Amino acid sequence: MGKRCPSLRTRALLAIGALLVATCALAQGAPAGLRADVVFTQVSPLSSNPELARRLLSPLAAARIPAMLARAGKALAEQPISLSQEKFAVFVPSRKPPGGYGLMVFVPPWDEARLPPGWSPALDRAGMIFVSAERSGNGETDLGRRAPLALLAEQNIVRLYEVDPKRIYVGGFSGGSRVAMRLALAYPDVFRGALLNAGSDPVATALVPLPPRALFEEAQEQARLVYVTGDLDTSGRVADENSIASMRQWCVTDVADEIMAGIGHATPDASAFSRALEALERPAPPDPARLAACRSAIEARLEARLGEIEALIAAGKRDEAAKALADIDRRFGGLAAPRSLELEHELAGS
Image (cartoon, rainbow, N blue to C red):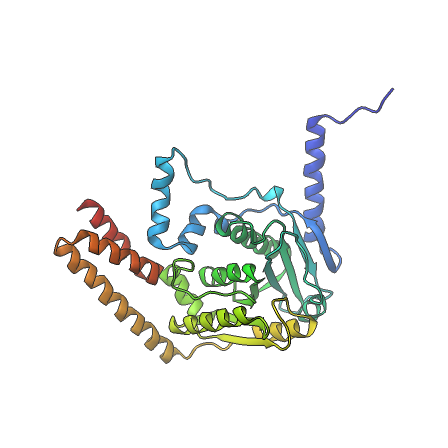
């Protein structure tokens, strides 16, 4: 008589058991080295759709989402992904530093969850865990997959290992570096800095709106950004220069620029990655007086622009006011809220 296939219920229990075994293996201190096909189980409010929208979209764009969905007869799901269906690669160094492991959450441009070649020795010396998600490449959406996968990777690793919160970083290569940059600015309460490899953008644009004021001020005070790009990657170098200038304009000044000699559009080799990692762990906090002056200059420009909109509304120039408000939302993002939201409500009722 043939061997009976297990029932659907039995198969489900076996699958759950396998997930628990994998998670427990990590929690109990799995052997050092690289592990593939790791499955995490803990979701987080930080990766919820409302929180992603609040931090990564401009205030006006985030506020319009519920109404847009309602008109389509839809509602916003709490989480953008089903975590039990996702797989990660995790590298654990051979030793845990006295203060806890460091952590590098890596956003790739490719879909595989893998460790770039030559990186493990530097991670091992630094006592730094590395984690990266599958299906998180350039073909995936930033808010729908790439950002939440990075956040959930961090949240699960810190639950499973003793991690030093001052040594938690996000990094990426090419398109993944651009996502990492946005996460470092919008989640400074999670990531202390970012390793930006051959991919960056200016901030305060439609593509990279500024996060809510309290979060952006935290990023101004403590975010360490290390740009690392090959000198033969001409477009990447130009992008880095524009991004760094933009950061400084918006008072994010703890920035290092590591140039790889004789390298094109590529991840750092072992030596370059080691230098970049060392630079990432040498923060240079801003001078308080200079930071205050920089913030005051931005605030003065913002107040002047908001005053212009109020004057346009008072004069009955509704269309001009709406256009100016859209520009402020793009340019100042979360710094303009809640006044930008109040002005839009006023325009909608006029």
